[in-house]
Length: 85
Image 1 (cartoon, rainbow, N blue to C red):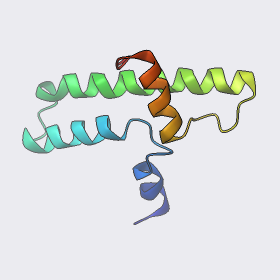
Image 2 (image 1 turned 120 degrees about the vertical axis):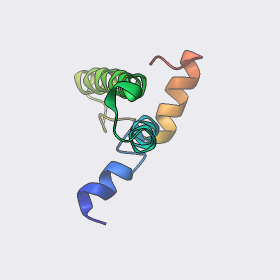
Image 3 (image 1 turned 45 degrees about the horizontal axis):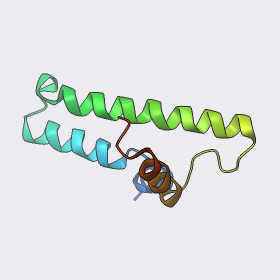
C-alpha cells in the first residue's frame, strides 16, 4: 500500500475514517449515485470541519501535535456527550 494511502487509513492521522468509509460504502452500494449518499457526504464534511477547527485551536495554543491522537479524540468526544457532527 502506498505511503499516502497508509496515512489516510491511520486512525491517528485521519479523524474521519469511519465517515469516509461509510460514504465510500454507500457509493459502492448505490452504483455511485451521489444523491443517495448526500447524508454521508454531509457527515464527512462536518467531521472534517469540526476536527479542522480543533487543529486550529491547538495550533494557536501551541499544542503538539495539532491533530489529537485517536485516544485524545475519544476523550474529547466523550466529554461532549454526543457527536458534534
